Image (cartoon, rainbow, N blue to C red):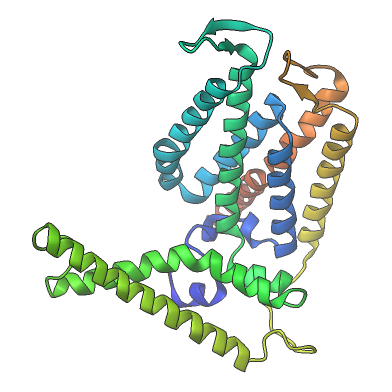
Length: 311
C-alpha cells in the first residue's frame, strides 16, 4: 500500500471496489440494511439471497482469501451449527428417526438448524465486507461529531486486527534476525521467545493507544465547535444510490410488514413461496443485495469502453 493510500485510509481491497468510493452515508446505510435483514429474516429464500450476494461481494473484495476463509472456517461452522440444533431441539411433527437417547429427530429441527446456521454465516460474511469498506476515516466522519468518543473507539477497533497482524510480523522478523523467534530452539525456548514477542506486542499496543489518545486530545477532538477536514463529498451519484437503496428497503420492509417473509418452522414448515407480490418483494431484496456488485460491473464496463475509445 502506498503512503498516499495509507493517509486516505484506503485498503488494498478498496482500490478495485467502486462501491467503496461512494459517500460513507451510502456505504453505512447499505450495510445496516443488509445486516439487519439477514439477522431478522429467516425465510429460506431471503437467507439464500443474502448469503449469495454477501459471498459474491466478499470474493470480489478479497479474492482467494475470502474463498480460503469460507472453506476453512465458514463451511465447518455452517455444518457444526446445522448439526447441533437437531441434537437439542426435538420440536416438529415430521419425525424422521429416533436418537439413541430416545428423542425424536424431526425434519423441522433440521431445517431450522440449517436456516440458523445460514443466518450466522451470512451475518459474519456481511460484517467482513463492512470491515473492508467502512474504514476508520469513514466511521469518524459519520459519528465524530455526534459520539466522538465512541467513534474513535470504533475506528481503532476496526484497525486493531490488521495493525496487530502487521506489527507482530515486524516484531517476529526482528526477533528472528537475532535467533529468538518461535522457530528457534527447543520447546521451552520457543515458548520463551513467543512470550517475549507477545510482551513486546502488548507494550507497543498500550503505548500506541496512549499516543493516539494524547494526539486526539491535543487536536481538540470532540470539543464543541471544532471543525474538521474531510475528503468525502456528497455527489449526484450518491443521491441516486441512496434513492435506489431507500426504494428497495421500503419494498422489503413493506413486504415484511404484510407477511411476505413469514416462514414458520415449528410445529410444521409453512410459509409464503409464490405469488406475484411475494416474488416482487424477493426481487427487491435480490436487487438490494446485488447493488455493490452491479456498481462494480457497471464501472468496469464504462472503463473498458473508455479504453476502447482511446485505441
